[in-house]
Image 1 (cartoon, rainbow, N blue to C red):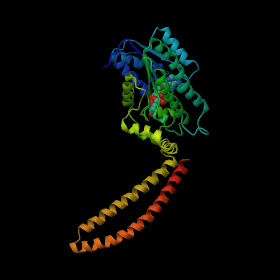
Image 2 (image 1 turned 135 degrees about the horizontal axis):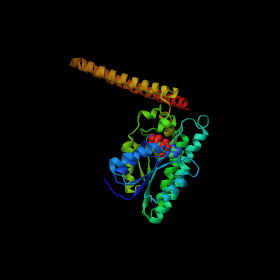
Image 3 (image 1 turned 90 degrees about the vertical axis):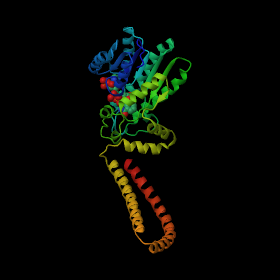
Image 4 (image 1 turned 180 degrees about the vertical axis):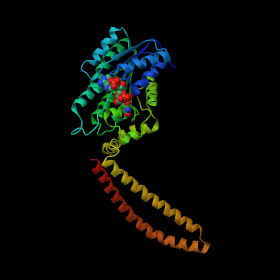
Length: 346
Ligand SMILES: NC(=O)c1ccc[n+]([C@@H]2O[C@H](COP(=O)([O-])OP(=O)(O)OC[C@H]3O[C@@H](n4cnc5c(N)ncnc54)[C@H](OP(=O)(O)O)[C@@H]3O)[C@@H](O)[C@H]2O)c1
């Protein structure tokens, strides 16, 4: 336990998922809380749990739709009215939409998304950061995402807002470097919360490999307390995704993320699965044949083995030639399959 009682953390999006897990960590460490989201019933229930489980002294619940004009100012004014000093600000509240931007997604929903993920995020940060800089103390944690560094087709607007948050945080790290105020970007991979369900993307390929929100919150919280500029929870595998985002061609990461974000029962996914099954089948066939040949060779007598070795040598020469033409033809098949997959995903 890292108790610093007397300090207050304001957490947006504390009613569910990663935000709720973060709120729990602050409560366990003895901080006072300001919990913000639309579901004030859920926040009040959570406040009761924190009071009885962790003895949290001061919890303020603010039920607010942060996608509305002026909502950041209203939250700030309410906090000031209650005489609360916010030492830690956690910008967690966020949402996404699902579908092709040009033809499928709804503009009203996207406006709500941009307002919540970008406008309110920026305004709330500006309001509280000014006070933190004046006091020369404070920390801010911003929920970005791994999709800030790779294309995320079918959640295009969402990914762009997370890239905004990431870029904002990196620039602010420089602006704040001569102060005792820090800002951290938390960049999780896909996480097991209600997020995909709310976005209408609960049946996408990516939802088969979701990570634990408790782990995400814990890694984010640790990095936040250390004042690190960014954190990618989940160890080396997710760090590799980040590196891929910087070095791999965006066409490649875009195609990979498009596949991950397709619905599981879509034609594109079925075609891709057939290609994978076909490749595995061929590879398994080759392994079984080689194993059978080796077993037969081991069961023969010394004279036959010498004869086979001689035959194998001359067969090896023709195999070398055959291999060259097989390689050429596999190369052709690869490009053929690749363009078919790209066509299916287009
Ligand atoms: N899950 C993932 O795969 C993933 C990955 C990377 C980053 N993230 C980011 O993590 C953050 C939290 O997401 P989550 O996965 O924990 O999803 P979640 O369980 O759906 O939580 C979203 C939170 O945001 C709040 N919220 C949504 N719209 C709001 C509004 N208009 N006004 C006020 N609060 C609002 C929700 O509260 P109410 O509904 O009560 O208002 C809820 O507390 C988001 O910023 C998301 O972009 C998630």
